[in-house]
Structure formats: C-alpha cells, structure tokens
Length: 152
Image 1: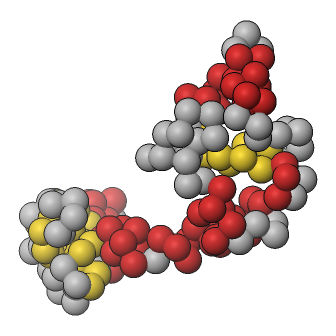
Image 2: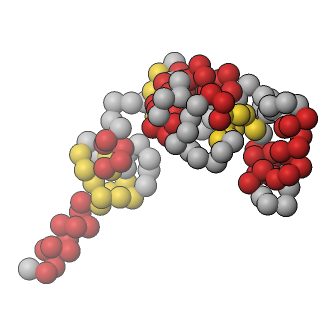
C-alpha cells in the first residue's frame, strides 16, 4: 500500500510544458503556477525587459499598472494616509523642495510633526535629504533657519 502511494506521487510530478521545471502536475501538462496563467502569453515587457505574462499593450502586469494606473494608486494611498489631501494638492506641495529647490523626489513634511494635521499651512515639500536632516536633532536648526530665511 505504501508503495502505491509513493508511485502515485511520483507519477503526478512531471516536467511543465511551459516553464520546463519538474513540479507537481496539475492539468494540460502544466504546473500549478503555469496553469493559473494559462491563456496568457509570455512576452518581453517593453519597460522592464523581462520575460513575463502579458497584461496589455506590450507590458507585464506590474509595469502596466505603474504606467497607466499610477495616479489612481497614488490618490488612493493619499486618501488612506493623509485623509483629505487630494492628488492635485499633493502634486502642488511636492513640486520642489522648499529648502534646496530639488525637484526630482519630494516628500510631504508636517511642520508641527502631527500627521493628523493636514491643513495647507502645515504641509511643505522637502527632498529626502532635507527631510532626513530636519528629523535629525543636530541639523534641525540649520534647515529651519534656511526655511525662515526663505519665509516659508
């Protein structure tokens, strides 16, 4: 009896027709992972250049969502973490760092450090460097004096 169970398990494993890995057989000669994605074709993604399942317009699922649904995802996250902060308002605040005018990556900083207070006068945009410096005790006064000089 033990021998037949072992034989059944070994007969259920085979080489997957799609990924060529030896895995537990599901159906149509495919493993569980490939069977789940059965019907989608493998492509080289336009953006990440990796061989992945096709989503749409020549992109894999992750790159497609990043490219075409970024604003929706960003707006959803803003509602989740900042409550009443809209996407337009966030874009306005994070246009450039108010301390050094860096404009590539800008974070939102709460002046009173109360993350529940999302009023317009309490939010400023800071680059990651200035944001880190303002939260470190030894450089805080330098950044604050720079902000006061610029009359923020």
